[in-house]
Length: 124
Image 1 (cartoon, rainbow, N blue to C red):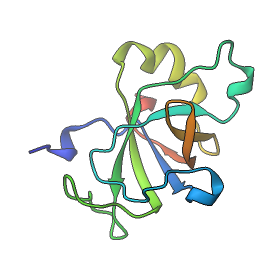
Image 2: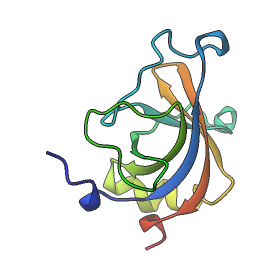
Image 3: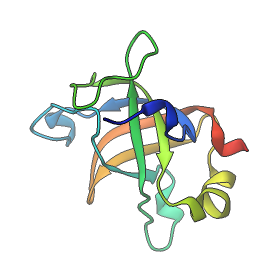
């Protein structure tokens, strides 16, 4: 069983999963433990396009962690965890700030849009 309290909360986002009509997944079921990647919305400036292992930890409407393997809302809040420790300070600390936009991606497919609402442990 995962203790979500022990995982890094590098930053927080408001997210919205895309519908199938918007180019999102056919299956609109997402669960706590979902492991997508992150792309900054300004990725066109990246050479080549950078995809980052930054994973969501979903929060429910009451501010509590969604239980492990439970279904998550199609819109909501997530704490984001930068998986590669070395990249926290060398890449992401300078890029992440409130208002920065990004996407949850599965390979080349954007499945959700997100906006940073708060910087957490990444500030340290």
